[in-house]
Length: 102
Image (cartoon, rainbow, N blue to C red; front, side):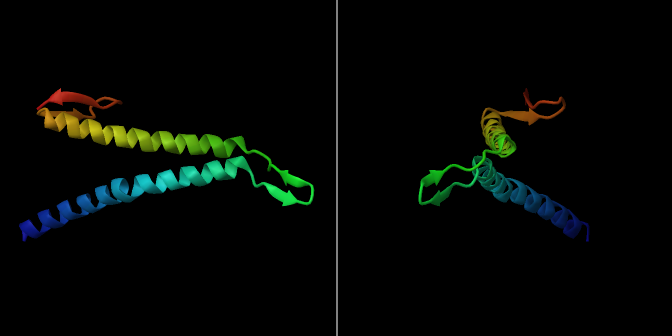
């Protein structure tokens, strides 16, 4: 019975990591694109021509912040892959991740 508990414990951790990294980063990227579009404002077209919409700096800031989170996640994933390839591990003992020997 303990083996089933261990299997289920590992399965939910894999599911959570897959949701966060597999679907979470693309969702954050899509929200960043949407935020940039909202920050640019909505242009209107009439007989006199195209008038740009009112810009929203908060939308632009949030969009770039979401892109920074996505880039940090990708770089952290690449760092993990490279560190384990060289026989090291990624440690989160401090505020920032460090590469330490196994």
